[in-house]
Image (cartoon, rainbow, N blue to C red):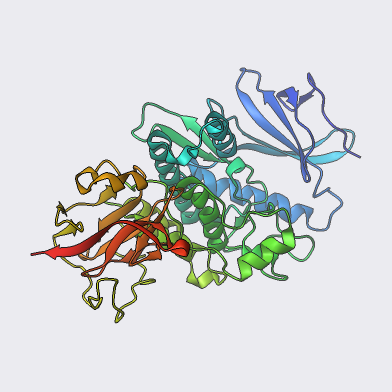
Length: 435
């Protein structure tokens, strides 16, 4: 029977410098080569050499490592530098990976931000500096996932703790991403040798529907589902399905209980809050065929989605608004204006983060608006949309109803803040197209 290594032990040319607690499948170590290069070493408890699928597992790992090294994923996924079988009290399998440092995993980063903001009443994601950082992380993360998927690799256990961010001021984003803990990742075009012998690796609150369906195999679309959960956390400040009850989590997932998220800030142009929100919601479809690809999600985050994700939810065509104007004319113009009850107006021609400061000309009721209350955007097709911001003090109202998700704007719509349940409407502004 194989035994655990200790600090100072040598296995092949690697000397152990630190021992981590054993995981479910392997024991992990920090180690160094004779030249002093650091590596991350894993000693596998499962599968043991006596297991019927052990040899197939070793071959599968070799192919996985080769695909990472030879594809664009090499820039974004932790690289296997060695794999070998050795006798250490008994025969066992080892893998050595590149050592990642000068950063922290995404879970650590988010926890640190929450701790820094816990004494304030403003969520971390409402801080403009934090928001900008989260948008960058989201783009970098999805670039890495898209590269991984190009090599037909399914990570299969995505979660914030498995996305390691490295500070790198030499590149424009300022961060590199390393996707870690990939030893039980899957080849999308080859069945895993443990299929039918044991389940697929996953983590509570981050499992896709396919992880939880008997006989199903996690796929590239399964990664996209979990990516969306993480992007909700980054861009909206919450996990849509978080619960301590795995059965409740499964029910929420299958019921498609999530709503399109209200983002915590304005996506930098040419990206659109409305498109990002709509596509993130599509990623959580219980049907894998209803989800976009990682490349499509990356494109929409960068504003290159070409209308891929625009949602028609909430358009309410054919109804009338509070002013009695039929809302059949969707706003599609270069510029619009917001008109107050006293005739004051504000003209807009670009995507705008609408809030208290911008609306100061409309009078004292602007105090009921947050600094960042909602977003008005013009899509590539010329259609104007409105999207809520996360965590506002008062609700954003459109024609007296709470704005829960991005929706198209129509000629004559009234935007205000207040409380729908109490009938409170403050500073209504009527939307008009400008020719």
